[in-house]
Each structure stands twice: as C-alpha cells, then as structure tokens.
Picture 1 (spheres, rainbow, N blue to C red):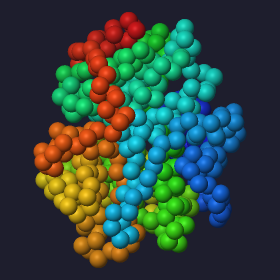
Picture 2: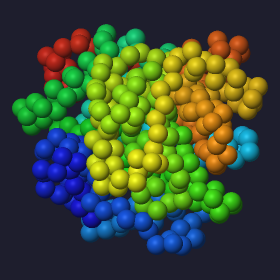
Picture 3: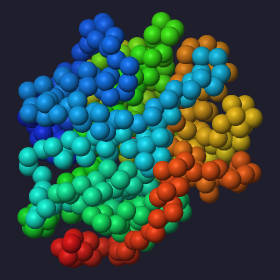
Picture 4: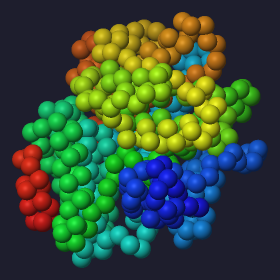
Length: 432
Ligand SMILES: *Cc1c(COP(=O)(O)O)cnc(C)c1O
C-alpha cells in the first residue's frame, strides 16, 4: 500500500519511505491511502493481540518486502499482556501499562524498533543509525527499552530536567550501552526545538545518520490501532455490542489510532478524547477552529501539549468521513478534578489511576451522569506508580511499582547535562 500526506502536495510513498521519513516533504503527516472496512469474519480465528495485529496491519505491508516479516514483528513487539478489566456494569478499563516501561508507548516503540531493525537501509555496527528523541517523560524510556543493545542502532534522549517525575528520570538513565541520556535545564518545547534543528542540519546528518521516533511516526501509529481492534472484538464477541473508548490524549497519537481502528470496521462506537488543562483539542472539536497555544504544565505531564501534531491526521480523516464528527468528542480536565478522580477511584472502583487515566475517568463519570448506558472503556495509558509524586499524596499510601519498573529503579541511573543550545547538542552528537 501507498501512504499519502495530509497536506496533499507530496506524492504518495511506499511503506518503508513513510516509516523513515517522519514528516512528508510538504510538511504533512503520512496516512494510509485506504482504510476501508475489512470483511466480516476477518478476525474470527484471532485469540491474541499479535494474531489480531497481523491481520489488521497486513494490508499496509502488502507490496513491501517487510510483509514477510510482519508476523514476527507482531509476535516480538505486541506480546504484552493487554487485559480489559470490568470495573462496573458495562464499564471497562483497558490496561496498556504491562510493557517494560509501564506506559502504552511500549507498544509503538517496540513495533518501530522491530520494523526498522528488519529494514535494509538503517545502520550497521560501523555506522549505527542514531534515534534522536526529545521526551516529556514516557517516550524516551519506551524507545530506549525497545532499542537497547540492538545492533546497528543507538539512541540519544533529551529530556527537560525539571519536567519529569523522579521515577521517569531514573528510568530514562538506567539503560547505558547504546543509550545516551541528556538532561536539559529547559522545558520540553526547547528539547523538541533542539532535536528539530539537528534533523534540519544536513552536514551533521552526513556524519551522523539520524532517525526519529516521535509521536508522528507511522511506525508507532500503526501498532497503536491493534489494541483497539483486539479489545473491541473481545467485547463484541461477548455482548454483540460495539464499545466506545475514552482515550487520554495529548499529541493525539493514541486518539487518532482509535479512529483508524474504527474506520477499518472494528466494532467501535464513539471515541472520546480526554485532555488535561491544555484545551486545544476540545476547543477544536467544539468550534472547528484550530488555535495552537503554548502548553501549560499539569499533573498529567505526558499530555502537556498545546499544538498537537496529530491534529493534521484528525482533520484529514474528518474531511474524508463527515460522519466522524458525530462519533468524536473531547473534554478538558483540570488538575483538581484529576486529584478528585484518583482519590475517588480507590473507593468507587478499588483502583488507583495514573493522572492521565484519571482524565478519562472524569469523562466516564460525565457520560454516566448525562444518562449514558453505553458500553464504555477507559484506556489506562500508564501504571500509577510511574507518577508516585502525584498519586501517593492523594491516595495516602505507597503505590508499589510493577516488577519491570522495580527492576529498572534498582539499576544505577546515569545522565549527562546538556546546555540548551544547538552548538552543544551538535558537538555531543559528533563525539558519539
Ligand atoms: C504519551 C502519553 C499520553 C498521550 O499520548 P498521545 O499519543 O499524545 O495521545 C497519555 N498518557 C500517557 C501516560 C502517556 O505517556
């Protein structure tokens, strides 16, 4: 299959070009040229997430040599426990935090690493490909875990020193080997700008081959459609009813993935986006006007985005399918309400939610108060123990980390300081 740019000016490209490119030459984002519904019964024999993923993603890989590897890529990347737990009548939580770094970004990062690792173009041990990422917390560790000790690759992470939780910082620095972690005394926006400047530096890229792994990457977006497919099919088999998802979202990567799964004919009814106090997306959905603004810091820090890049994909899909508007809504949730939902979750559902998931829980409560008796599924994007500084004071007790996170926290952690200017980053990359 070919992939087209949301700006409509660049020509359609094949899968591998779209995976490597990040942005299209016309500054648009790549989307599959076709996402028609799959025939009824396609998934009848599927029992696991990797099996479902193979069938769902096959069409995108047809015509590319990678199609031969798709089964293995799915088996090696998506073999993560992905339980959907019933917490009240017709109310579910889809737990996407059982991967190595305890956040849903593991799905995308592992798939991307396994895909790039099978392509001919990328690096060799003599001249490794450098994956350069700016992270607001969770992307960096997921990408590091996915590429750790993978021959032909190295990862350089930039993170805002004061913008991540203590455990996130520890996790970012605990890999070593082919992973270099740089802490920057600035905000996330500055880290992101430095990374962009490196990608625009042709002379540097001649000497240090670079690739990105940010949230616009098609190699992260495609696998994120698979857990929506898997969960909605499971629900449909049990109840013969479609399922609606409530997705905590910032850059809209996870939100757009849910819409893509819906577009491909999976039994998904509505998709509700839950954002934190950054309200660009709810405002856009409500008024149709897109107004980017500087991001504000909130308790749900992985969603502190004021100008979400994946809006380009949302607009494109809405223009193509006018019925989509009726199936999508978005709600902004403030910090006080995040705390209240975490607090209440313990008694009401016997669960501790991470601050991002708590935004989705607020949307759930509003739907129920408005009288909805639809089947609703809250998407849990991270384990609460990753955000202990927020969650523990509200809960009033310690939240134990899951085993993989505990292991990472037990390892030593190392990061280097980096001045927030481009000359320093360039000098460090040339010294790799
Ligand atoms: C990254 C992240 C999000 C937001 O994901 P998007 O792809 O930007 O929608 C939500 N929750 C957690 C825990 C995250 O790490």
